[in-house]
Image (cartoon, rainbow, N blue to C red; front, side, top):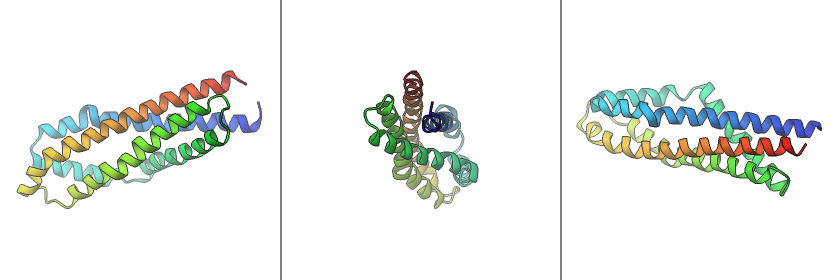
Length: 167
């Protein structure tokens, strides 16, 4: 196995792990965090979500989220340039799923909602009336992120196996 092959395998593995970790994080929000927030008064839910949205913007989370996007972009480029080598289709699908279903969805749908929520006073009637719609739409897009991150993980793991089997 060449150094290039070894680096490719490591890049696929690291990217699959990143996609899996992001999928797990999004799954936690879809499965219980948002449901828990929907059970408490709107003022408390808005306050909690505003806090979450501030705290999540930390070095570790951003490194994982954006680092996975970078490795997906590298793999997507590799898949395009190396078509039709074994695993290239799976690499392309997995990387594309993460970039479209996680990065693009986050930037176009979740972040704008978070920014709108950040401008609200949690104690206001406006926040109380905005919360149910915010939670429903935000969570719908979070389901998309969950599914696409986990699907990206699966496609990248299949790609890893295909590349290993052809060595």
